Each structure stands twice: as structure tokens, then as C-alpha cells.
Image (cartoon, rainbow, N blue to C red; front, side):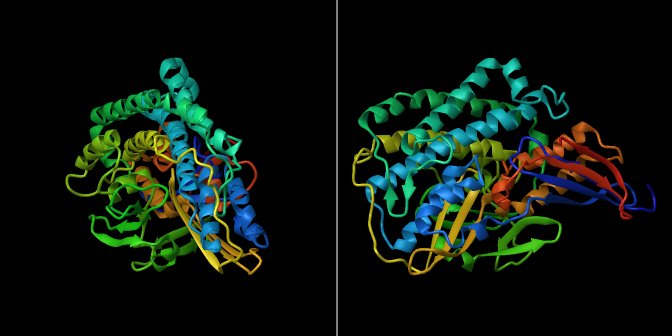
Length: 478
């Protein structure tokens, strides 16, 4: 290959939600010189929202995704609260957070046990025919059953409140439309201990992997970056209603307690001609120096503590991995994800035991519409921002949605490059090489359909290409 630059494409990527391609560019010596995560779905969802009334937005925006609809549902409802200029009743606030925590319980369980764990339990070079949830069922049926139960537990809470497990009908601007019965409250409380026990099994699994593969975990897609997430005023992890905190690569606080409505004071969005997905960055550092990460790894790096006892105990162990600094290895996303799942389960118990959770005052009213409103929540994948501009009748004039996967776009590209540089060493792709690139992407649990708001089928691919345009090799699951 001397004298010419070549490219590898990986398509489609697997065990993620969305349609994309990885292109690996090789230099004259056959080493990876750069890498692109090409997201090929065309955006358009925000334009579809124009002209719709604010009351419809919690139902419309969640149609961008079947994996994390609850997050979009609640972010839009919070933006609607701001446009109405109301403070929702305490019971409505508790019930919204209950649904949000249930989403964490089921989403984090789905990602770790079904999508990520096969790579860790069977090895990244294992047979792809069994390196999946079917193989997990065959190798450890009890663990697989527990994971299914855990996901069903979270989904049942969502269905109880919102009538459906996917695309619930629940939150509205000003509050919610469904109360929680005492009977359902007691039923959910009776299952908390079992849910906690399953998350502890997951934590034992990931910690065993980390102890056996310490060198790999510490070097795999490990790099300095900024970290963005919500915290409460005391610096505690906050997933529903906190304020934005941004740390640099060394843990220095760049921004703290920034209101969600002021996100544009710290974030700007850029585009590249090789991807439809936006590239948000920290505005004061610019592009691409302002790269930051969101999601479980970022949230635990940003937080000072967690308010529930079991999760906070694990959080302290997590913090030790950074040796006084940031935890940088992308594989640690999985450990952080399980700690958050444990927190969410403990938080479900706290919410269910709170006086007023079964109250009937569910909605605040307003006859006026403010010109704009912003709703921010921590979706399981990371910080989610819904920003709507409305006219005097409540119709949407403009919408801007920044999802977690967009916030992680630069970091995912960096992860792909580092792993490819480490493991892709030939002009002929092996499945193990490609899987490692995909593993780097799966750390972020990306949702590419959310990020581009596209419709249709979503396969993903990898390609190897020369600087003259020659495709040397490709892999696809179309």
C-alpha cells in the first residue's frame, strides 16, 4: 500500500439504534490516519413540528424514537410548562420523575444486558452468531431472564402512567393527565428489592470484566474531553430537574448551575459535509476544541455525589478509577450506566414512598403563551434539550432539539479513530477488528434516529477506501 492513502468503511454498525457508516482512512503506510462516523439519515423532524400547537409536542416529539420516547415526552412537556409560564403541582412533578426513573431502569437494563454484555462476556473476537442476546440466553439463561424481568418492571410503570409502554400519553404542558392508585403504588414497591438485586448482578458482572481486562478498559477509546450533565445545587446527580454543569478534561468547572433556558450561552452547533448529525461544542472553546461528552460516564464525572445509599457507595468506587481526575475510558460508560440504573431503582422507591405521590392535583393552568420555552432532562443516553418558539396562539414557529447522541458526536468520532488506530492494521478487514470499532460506538448507546429525526429502516456499515476513491473492503448487514 506504499505511496497511496486508503479508506475502510464499516457498514452497517450493529446493536445500536439508527443508520450509519464508519469510514476509516489509511495513510501511505496502511495506518489509520482519521475516521468518520457518517450518519446518513436526513434531518427534518424539527421542520415537521412548525405549525403544530404546544399541546401536541409531548406526543409528536417522542415519535422520533421507540427506544427513549419517555425522555422526549418529558422534555417537550417541560418546554411547554415554560411557554405557559407555570409551576406544575407537586404530585405531577413526582409522577413525571417516576416515569423518568422507570425509563432509566428499563433502558439501562436493555443496553447493558442485551446489547453490550455479549462483547464483554464472550469476547470481542468471539463468533458473531452467538455474540448477541441469543447467545446470552444460551450461555446464561438465568441472567437473560433477570434482564427481561428488569426491563419489564420499568416498562410496566411507564404503561401504568401513560397507557402504553412505548409513546406514552401522560405528560402535558402544565402537568400530567393520570394519577397513581394506591394499589399500583404497593405493587411497584413490592418489586423494588428484586430490581435492585438484578442491578447488583450487573454491577458484579462489569466489575469482574474490568478487573480481568484492566489494561484494555483503561486504554480502549480513552481520551481527555469535557463533560456535561445536570446536577442539583449541591452537586448531586440529578436526572430530571437539575441545572447544567460543564467540566473540562482535568475536572475544572467551566460552567455551573446554568439554567436550561440559557443553554445557548454555553453550547453552539456545527455541521460537517460528511454527516447529517450536528456537532455541538462548548461555545467558549469553539470547534472542535470544545468537544464534550454526555451520558452516564459524563454525569458521574460531573457529579459530586449521588443521593441514594447503594448507588452512592458504587459512585465512590467509580470515582477512585480516575485517581483524583476524570474517568476517561469509554468502556467505563457501562459501569456508570449500571450505577445509574441502581440509582434510578432506589429513586423509584423514594418517589413511591413520598407523601402526595397518589394525589389528584395534577395540572396547572394558564391562558397565556410565552414566546419561547426550553425543556432539559437527562435522557439515559445524555443531556436532551427541547427548545420551542411559539406564537400567541401556542403554535410552534420554530423548534430546536439537541439530543444526547448529537452532544456525543465529536467524542464518538474520536473513539472510533482511537480504536481503529489501535486495532485495524491491514487492508483486509477482520470481523474482530470491526467489532472493536462498533464496541467503541456502543459504549455511548447512540440513538441515530433521534439524532437525525429520520424515518425508515436503520442499518449500519464499515468501509476501507483509498485517497483515489478505491473501496478496498466493506462489511454490511443490509
